[in-house]
Image (cartoon, rainbow, N blue to C red; front, side, top):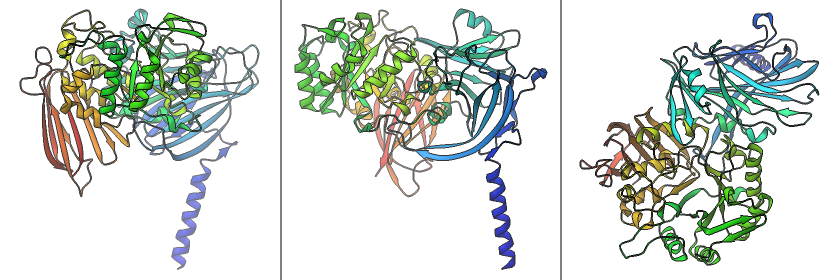
Amino acid sequence: MKSNSSNIICLLLFVFFTSLSFCSNTDTIVKKLYSPDGNLIINIDNNENNENKLTYSLKVNGQTLISKSSISLFQNSNVEILKTEQVKVNTTWTPVWGQFSEIQNYYNELKVTLLHNKTPYKLYIRAYNNGAAFRYEIDQISKNSKPIFSIEYSLPKDSKLYTPAREGKPKGPLSMQTLFDALVKQKLVMPILIENTEKPFMALLESDLASAPGFEVIDFNFDKKRNKLIAKNEYNLKSNSLITPWRLILFEKNIGDLVTNTVPLNVAAPNKISDPSWIKPGKTLWDWRVHGYNTEDGFTYGINNESYYRFIDFAAKNDIEYFLIDDSWYTDVKKGHIEMSEKLDLQKVSDYAKNKGVSLILYYDRHKGVYGDKKLFSYYSSLGMSGVKYGFMGRNVSFSKEAIRLSAESKLLIDFHDNPVPFTGMTRTYPNAIAREYCHAQQDSRRAFTPEAFIRMALINAIQGPLDMNNGIFDITGVNDGNREKGPKKLNSLITTVTAEAARTLIIFSGLICLPDAPEAYAAKLDLFEFLQKMPVGKWDESKVLHAKMDEYISTARRHGDEWFIGSVHSKGGNLAISLDFLKEELNYKITYYEDTEETDSSTNPEAYQIRKETVKKGDVISAQMVKGGGHCMWIRPE
């Protein structure tokens, strides 16, 4: 009994002193922060060359990913560390929608109080098991100060960098030697993906820009003399206080895991919509690419009620939640007035959709004039709309953030066209921000849309959040023949297969899957369309990337309840061995395969496919065989 009492006392003392190490500490300056699993170490120092400049470094499992690099809020100023405080956080939260139904927020944080020109301010550093985060806060800005949030990344010499290129194919691999020359031609934009020999993959980006008024999107530059990558954004707001976005460094052993890394969501501000029950992710048909499509019964799709009734009928019959009408519904915009097209009666279309249980989303294009956003969203709501696809807002942060907030007030989903602000983490803060074309949207920039470019965007652009890529073309031959008014100018330029198109709708995470083809194109392949129909968009309990290699292949699995959906594509053609070790032990499962055939060819015979059914169990290994530019899909559910 005495021995047990001693053990209990020792245990209590251990817990006490362990807890004490994560409490406020005003006597000791702590300059080292560990992740909860102890594998990440972040070191800070303010004695760089005796210049009192603040630096940080980052090691993972003993490997240096970022060597000593500067981090600052005020340029060329001395920094004094006044005190440090540590805290440990381990909570879970439930997103309104997303890749996971529950997310663990588990980190150690170091709050560093700094002094600049007699003004105290704070640097928050968080260490996650798969990422690091940095943010500044200042309560009182001196009049002569010009805050610029700057952070350097001193990367390993063998680093290879990839970066989005707007509607072009993502750039890379860029070596440290060629990085400066690449930046002269075009700036690097977030997220930057980094690969090194025998080291974890990394991604550099920011999150929670929504909580940082006065800051625009970060720009990356390269200091050729010092061989360091630099991210900066200036503070452009007249205010006494500021808070910066979180600068993130993500790292994962497997490249695909960067896409499902939850650190960007964890650092974002919690949901600001008190009742988000009206926010429903889903699939939408879309009229823009279908104009000019000729059906077998002699009908030609265009801007008219009959065309839109056909879309709505198919959506209602096949469990598609939305129908998106592009800018063809109006002809001109003036302040407070939108001139509707005489080719259709929007009110009748709206009434027809409502009667069929299909929700409408309307496009809005600022190129045609400015209506005034404070009235625009309430006007859309008065028309009975459920969402807006907003075109050509550009990378204006405050403007775009206000559009998201105002659309939420009118209970509207918002999807951004063109090259919008990459609001990473926004789906937590304002979950009505359902998607964005922070990528090449299919058929918009066909010179970029190759099987290799798709894989790059799925591994690079997708790190920053949900994408609207317009995948899912079933009438590939018709598109390649130029049988569309809004089709590609270059014929036979879409290299893909119909199973790859189905797989892409799953691989690219989004809250709104925008299907670009005609109802008749999907109706002709309803057995394949079943994969899209059954897919519960944005309502995933679990997501994982099973296989991924830059430019070659990616295979993604997503779970909803006890059902799994798996999509794979392969640019070169080949086989991926997919182990079903994630299934439950005690259950047998039905599986439906949607596959390329031996006759499928992404250039000459892209619409050949086959469907098979089997029974599988945990531990079975599936051989997913794909042709060059092809794909493979699986729907797995308990017997």
